[in-house]
Every structure is written in structure tokens, then in C-alpha cells.
Image 1 (cartoon, one colour):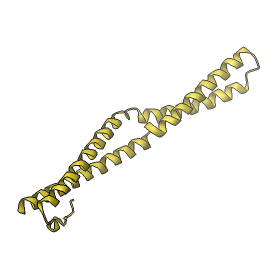
Image 2 (cartoon, one colour; image 1 turned 120 degrees about the horizontal axis):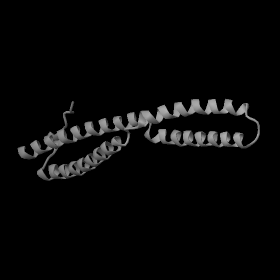
Image 3 (cartoon, rainbow, N blue to C red; image 1 turned 135 degrees about the horizontal axis):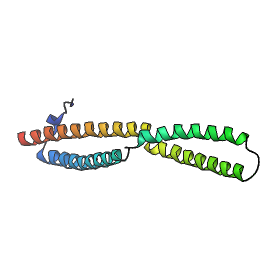
Image 4 (cartoon, rainbow, N blue to C red; image 1 turned 30 degrees about the vertical axis):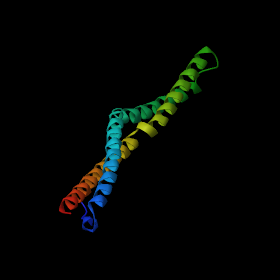
Length: 137
């Protein structure tokens, strides 16, 4: 839904041209932002798999910690501790990646894209209104 703009108050063709130039520059920036967001969204294909892997690793870590309780000191215990450490590091890596590529980040990017799309629609509506006013002058 576009606003009804007060283009009737533009007094001259030159004023229309100045506003049209500004709108064209703004539109170029919006198109670029839209393109960037669309590209970023293609990187979110594994967003739900990251969250699923974090949950899975949490279960594995709990199991590994329980297993370590019953293992006496020695090579086997050190090996199991190393496995636990690798799982914890992997989970931490995934948690930091989830902030950037998780489901919440995906939804935020989708929202940003929707906002840019609306801004482009409004930019086009205003451009058309100014062009019509310019033609009427």
C-alpha cells in the first residue's frame, strides 16, 4: 500500500529532476541491499542442521561425561577426555556459528529482505508520482 505523496507541491521541473535523482540513488542502494540479502539467504541452507547438531552434541557430551566417571586414570581415560574435549570444542564452534547462521538469524534476514522489498515498492511509487508531476508541469 503506497502513500499518497504531496508531489503537487513540487513547483518546477528542476525540483522534480532533483528529487528523481535522489530517488534513483536511493533505489540503487536498495537494489544492492536486496541482492546482498538474497545472496546471504542462500547461505542459510544448513541453519536447522546446525541447531540439530548442537542438540545432538549436547547429548553426546552428557553421555561422555557420565562414561568418564567410571574409567580409572590411564590411557583409556585420557583418550575419552580428548574425545570429550573435541565434542565441547565442536559444540562451541557451532554455537558461535548459530548466532550468525542459525534459525533466528535466518528469520531476521528474511525480515530485512521483506522490509527492503517494501521500501523499493514505495520508492517506485514516489518515482512514478514525481514523473507524473514533472510531465504535468
